[in-house]
Every structure is written in structure tokens, then in C-alpha cells.
Length: 395
Image (cartoon, rainbow, N blue to C red; front, side, top):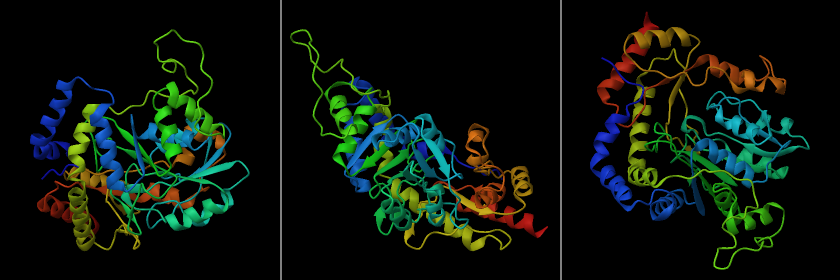
């Protein structure tokens, strides 16, 4: 039997009769950028996450960049984050001239350890950027307490955590800003790239909307005033020709071209209606794995005060390479996220970290194996995965 690590075709086949009419409606409207379809999806996401404002954008990486900028983070500022995550988390920080400062993780959930943050804070620290890795919620009470004590922003990377909860509240509704990705393999995945930032502050949402569209027009002027410490009042206008929008081609900010297109919004709106069922299916698969996998692997644990959305089901073993090779040979797809922690990546050589600097993250990189977990995975396939893992350790 061949068991794929992930299979988008199964989900598309099940949703085809819903997605295709929605996409065709957008194509027929010829309204491909912005417009009512995107606005409707933003409102649905805001309601689903119980967040005040949802601002869509081009992808998850740009969501992080926009969020950092909207929080006033800039060149020379330090942002404390995890070294055990996808590269984009720290890349976004570095791309705006800020400095990623890595703190170690907890091995039980692979998330940022609140106990290690305090020692990393300096007079240049401006924010803490936790990642709800693999769909497991971070200890947000502890992280937020440290951040608030030192006057720091909390910027969540929730790219893998759509539908995740902490103390009964959806991730995406509690931090200063929260960032999501709609990459096709995510729990809520589009038909291409897409991203979103959520916040409960109207001023932050205004800045986000300005930055995603070149910092242009009246909104850009208002955003500039807010970022400069003022109120949302526009800067003085230059002379323009009569009958011409005086704001249209005036730019008060350096922004980006980062917009979610209407085709993606249409498909995502359809899938959002199925998200809770998808996450429930993932939870059921995770429970079956945990019930039947052998004791020679370290199983993932869900935080008692949180609700895991099981973007990945991650086991640990000191025989990682052997196990992955064996499962591959048996036709079982596996993932090895993430084999090199960020503090040891060549791109961050200049930050001064070395092997041994963050031992838990390094151990996780050596030991983690991700098993197939997607809503359409059959029980027969699950049992085959379990059988192959257990057979490997019984040899």
C-alpha cells in the first residue's frame, strides 16, 4: 500500500461542485483584485476567529512582514522568536532590517519556552513572535505576561494553527496581531498563495490595509500619521488637476503589493465552511495514532488548556533517519520538519549562534518525524502507517 503524506486531490474531488461555481462566478465578474468576494471572505474570517478585523494579503510570509511593520518594528529592533519553525518566521523579521533573537523551545509541544524569553530581552527588544507550531497552541498566558511586563508587542505566527484554541478562544483573537497562511497544504488551504493578518485594533487594521497596497492614497496618509505617533489625520495634499482624486497617486509610506485575489477568496470561503469538520477529522486520526503507536516513539501531547488542530502529527525518535528510510521504502509518506533549526542556518551566521546554543531546538531537529494526517486519510491507511512504524521498532 502507498500512503501519501498529503493528498489535495481527494479534498478537491469532494468540494468540486462547491468550489467551481464560486470560482466561475468570480471569473465572470471580471473583478479579480479586491472587491466584494475578498471583503466577504475577510468578514467570514473575522467572525470565525472572533477577531475585530481581518486583513487579507498575498501569502503567509507577507502577513508576517505587514504585521511587524504595522506594530512599528523597524531596522535595528529585536524580535524574540523560536528557532524551530519554517524559515519565513525569522526571514520576515530580517527582511525589514530587524534582528531575530532566538530563544529555546519546550520539547513536549515544540513551541517557544516562556521561561527562556526574559533572559533574551534587551533595550532593543520590541516584540515577541511565538509560533503555534504544527497546530499546537503556545502557552499564551505566560508569553503575554512577559511581553506586557516589558512593554513588548505580541505577534503570533498562526500559519499552521487555523481553528486552534487557547482557553476557549480562537488563536487569532487574543494577540496584538496574528498571521495566517492559506498555502494549499494548510488546514485551510487555497488554490495558490494567500495570507491574512487579524487584529482587534482599528488603527492597526488601517495600517495593514495601507501597507498591503503601496502605502497609497488617503489611507496611506492616515497610516503614516499613526505610525509617526499621531492620529489618523491625513498629511497636507499637493496640488492636483481639477476633478482628479487628490490622494490617488500620493504615497506617504513605502508599502507592498500584497493582495489576496478574488479567486482565492472564493475558494477559501467554500473551504472555511468545512474547516471545523476537517480539524475534527485530523483530531480523530491523531487520537487513533496515539492509541496504537508503540511505546518506542515519543508521542505528541495536546496542551490541556488548548485545542490542537493537528496540522502535523509529530513523533520523536533517536532513530529518525532509519525510520524515515524504512517508511519511505514501505510506501508511507513522511515529513521531516525541520531538520536544521534557524539559529544554525547559514543565513543567520552573523547572529553569533553555534551548535549547542539552543539544545532543545537542536534535539527536536534531530528527532522529529511527521506522519500522514489529513482529513481524507482512511482508517485502512492509518492502520498501515501504525503497522509499519510498530514493525520497524519490533525488528
